[in-house]
Length: 190
Image (tube, rainbow, N blue to C red):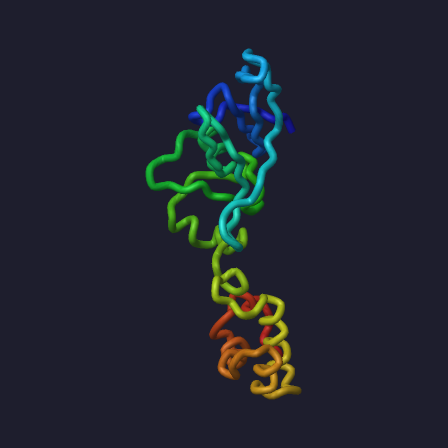
């Protein structure tokens, strides 16, 4: 696949972004006070890093202009360069390939409700289960509680003590009243 490059919005002549989600600086003249002259600084691909809080991270890069540095999310740069500047009230959405694929086919502008619905469930940014800020259990532990509760070899109280949760939590997990997004795809054992 051929990689296409366009200027980063508001950083024209300094940086470019590709339709594959890579960012590069361009060759430019910079003042070197040690020699009292301008020197050519060679452009390069910029290393990306993750920003945001756990369960809601995105790739970003640092861009610098007129002595001011700013971290900028890569998916927003791709959308603004290849589609249009961000329309008022819309968000940069990731598609089926998840939030770490910033290639143009995986991106679109969309509403807040689109960003909070099935798209977030699919790409793992919806804060439920172990992604929720107050979660005590990992998804694997929820599945283990579910399995143990349906096997019937242990009481709910014994399971609760094993996982340091209440018996009521075990009951809720077993009966799909909580964590159903994790256990809901399982067939209820008979």
